[in-house]
Amino acid sequence: MTMSRIWKAAIPLTVITGLAAGCATASSSHDRSTLCTSRLVYDRASSGPPQVLTMSGTGQQVQNLGVGHAPKWSPNGRLIAFDRLTGAGGHIFVMRADGKGVRDLTPGFLGRFATGAAWSPDGRWLAFGSGSGPTNGALWVVGADGSNPHMLVNVPGREEHPSWSPDGTRIVFDSPLANGPDHLYVVGSDGSGAHRITANGLDAWGADWVSPDVIMFANGAGSPTSNIYTIGPDGSGLRQLTHAPTGVTYGLPRQQSNGGLIAFMAATPSHVAIYTMTASGTQMRKLTSGQPGFNGWPDWSPCRA
Image 1 (cartoon, rainbow, N blue to C red):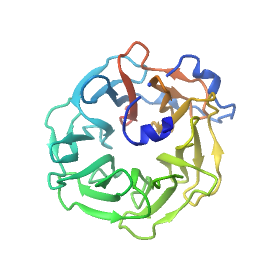
Image 2: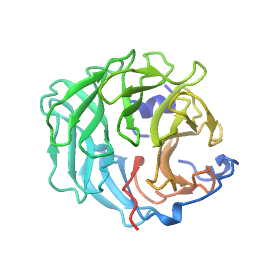
Image 3: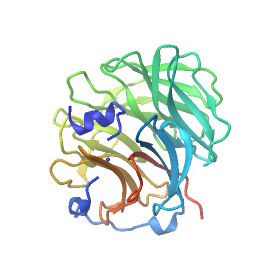
Image 4: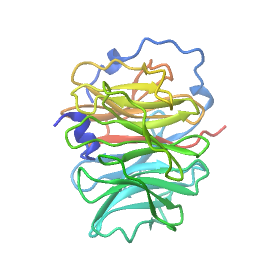
């Protein structure tokens, strides 16, 4: 099983030093990262269950919020959604940004595994993948208060890693088949019009819908080397943003809400860490140096002035 496949199976791994050699050479007309003050939420796996943590955008002020996996900050920055294994399966939870007030939004999901929740832009809904096994699943939506959980779409494979369009009308997700490849799909937020947007030559996963016309994702789910790309919602305009060293996997990119820095995971078979880079794919910086365990699944809080 490749590094990317292991990541997608939610088995955390962690990153070699010197990854700056994998920076893209593409130019950017404007770097807005200095205009955004935001924190990162992420998870860490070591001995025992994974933990949800936050840190500053420079890797400082680390806070442990408790057990959880694949955390996502709400659009207003007040809540964090995450998944957690329970005796009845895997459920979607929310908590306040200080780790208190934990609530289970999917208590009825007995024997199922819900994972990878993503907030709608208005903060009213969460989309997530749910299935009964590693190769079969569907995309679900639930209200932020736990109301009205319902299946949105079920395409071939196991739907996961959803991300909403900025206007909240569509959702991008990937759906890997048992033997690959993995592809990106777009579906209306009402479950209509599901269609694939990635070509046969791609093996795409972990998308982030960063602007109306740009979706960021990792390509190489079944390969030992994975890079970050961008593509249009209609499947046009494919562009490679990074050039990872052989055997290194870059994945799960998340961009600041002002279009500034991109946080992502970088992994080898022995190490997984969180890095940031500029919107043009340059100036990579490791944030989790000195932190124990395997650190991944980063997500930015909303920008503050």
